[in-house]
View 1 (cartoon, helix red, strand yellow):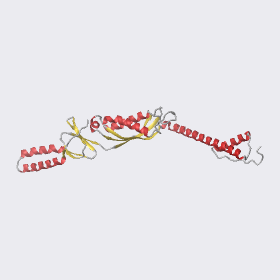
View 2: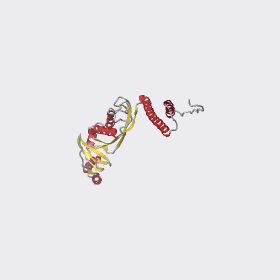
View 3: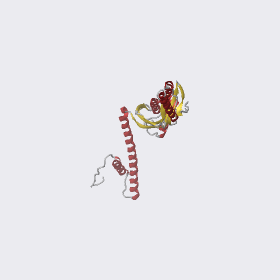
View 4: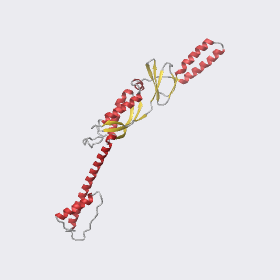
Length: 281
């Protein structure tokens, strides 16, 4: 587990180093060679211990293979020169993944890309529990995408019982993605701030076929509305004619009128009227 390390202020050791430098010069000018050499050794030993920790940055300290702690406080510090210091950024980072080909719940190949906002929460796990935590984030995010795709269909054209789909799931799908990524990245001490799908499409090999299917579905739905509206208009026209007693129509005339009105109202092109100047019979 991560633990805090209390380092000495670097400014104190700067003063010590300055005093040593003055004593070294004084010793050599007075002919005290041995004390001067010893102070040079001490000066050189202390020098590598200085380090700077920037805001939203940490330093993981290891002494001969033993974890000693993490410095999270920013500033200028000095620590044992034998300590190995590994800097780990605590800033939030973006992962904009390239769209990858996966199979949805019913086996259709789809392309999915996500945006992941993450940061290191536990430096001990990030430094020692995985080999490369940045690469680990990338690989596990792809694995989470593949699992998410297997939970939902792309749309409900083929799975009409699906209440949630990748295309229309919205927040529910994003929340499931965030939960899956969070569970996978816990081992590396990574906090997931946000995970969202930013690209979703059918794979190229079936995109044209699916587009035609969607167009056909849209055309059928539009035709249904047109016919429904036309029937209502014909019914209203017959009722108004009968109500206002404009003309008496027998069943044959009603059928002809209904046929003509349906052609006019449901046709793809504008109807061309034909004026009959003789008898309607």
